[in-house]
Length: 199
Image (cartoon, rainbow, N blue to C red; front, top):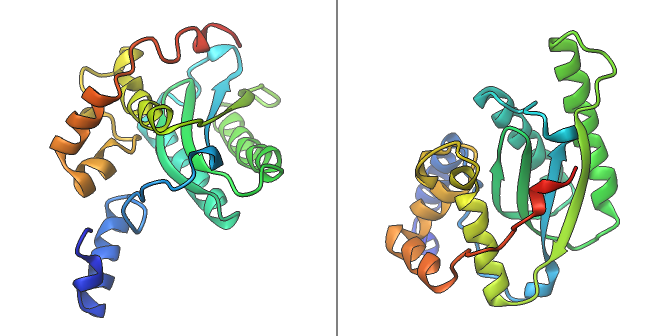
């Protein structure tokens, strides 16, 4: 994607179509200009129950998140969807949109999954939290935290094996060396410790 502007109009369209077919956003993740307009958004299932335990449900949730956030012009820069919670790194231009947005996403998903599981009225989502990104180090450590989250929670042995994560988006656009350098420069260490202990 680095040479996007040098491509013909037809080549650009083909490249965007290929990215969309792979489930990636249309363009590369841009470098942030003002870190304090980015937030780590986290939503957890009620009592940390694994309501998002299948690949199909994780992908359905991810697709709906992208659809709704795009409608509201909120750019998602990184993501990971796990069986009982998810994280998004988002450019937030209007903070008032978030509560309504999560209600719409979670409400729609809850109704459908409760019908599928024949459990009307079951509470699926607990709440969402937000943390403002305060610096370049905080931004890239958060990025690494999201990509490492499936390994941290024991769902896979490699971040590259988890489908509902932005790690492959970054791998395709920036390469393995960039991701490795980012990991070395901005290690996760104890980032996020204790976040998943409460519900």
